[in-house]
Length: 272
Length: 158
Image 1 (tube, rainbow over the protein chains, first blue to last red):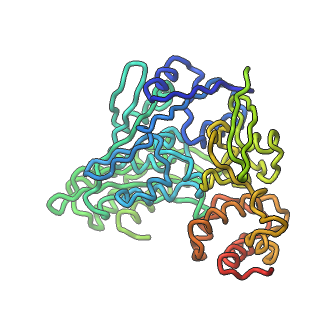
Image 2: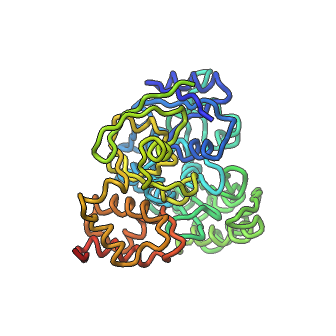
Image 3: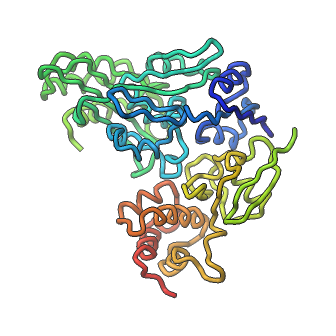
């Protein structure tokens, strides 16, 4: 079925077109929307695009990093100042998917996809969206909780604070096929250290719930402590709390619950 | 619904076609231009057999909205041979038994070309990474990896 394609010069106009049409979807890199069209998704009758260069902007010079929603994973990998995001970017797809898929689209990618968003959730990112109501910034956790209702809003950019050190931010994707494969689970941890103790721990999990979630019980086990064996064990044993994984071809819910603590322990203790 | 005029460069030649809204580049290449070298595999971005180069960058044509290539350069396997001669990568695939059923081969060759265009002497790991988005169900990948390394090393029969 043919769909109507609307291309706009500005993100503003595209956001207007998106919010006024329930059957409109925004086309970023195509890895989600074109896939849906190829599968015969009749709920999409309009494709909205924007050629706005602001959506492709990377601002990575300062302590606060902003990535336009249209920035691809290949561009993240080409940016030396974004080294802390290279592991999650590299874990996505093959080279072609990394040349196409975007930061903004990844926010909407259902499990077993959406690995980059797990990293952004651990980094407490902020999502800038433009809807019929105007522009606003939403904490990524709130954005993900209401993801099903975000269809009419256009993501403009995502921003986060650069981790203080390479040690402070860790990422791990568990896949059955390497180097490319859908995630069984994905984990990311941001562990800012203040005076030898963890202050503001963030643990994010992918494929452990309908959307990417924070492992709050594990965060509580880490908060205010030093990263020693006892603390790591406590965080690992709390990893499943609040999770609701499901079965898919890559793994069962039971298996995901079994392994999430093991991989969190390895991530926190710096094991390969 | 009205057709959309679309012009782009296809293997160094300017082409102009009319596409329906939502048509993907793979359909445009195969059905409207008659270039059958990119294949339809999964339609989901999982297999890589529809891989083409857009402005020199590896893309999946089945997930590319056709009209987004307006004014850009699209290269497919059809443009790889040099006159009557096979491209060194094609020669290396033949020499190293890198094609069995052949369905993945067009995508493998484009992924390999994307790699060698940027990195003429890749390591084995870089080759594996470069073809990681392309699925082959026959060869077990080893002959393909060896063929790409042979082409990169100039170890190709005339």
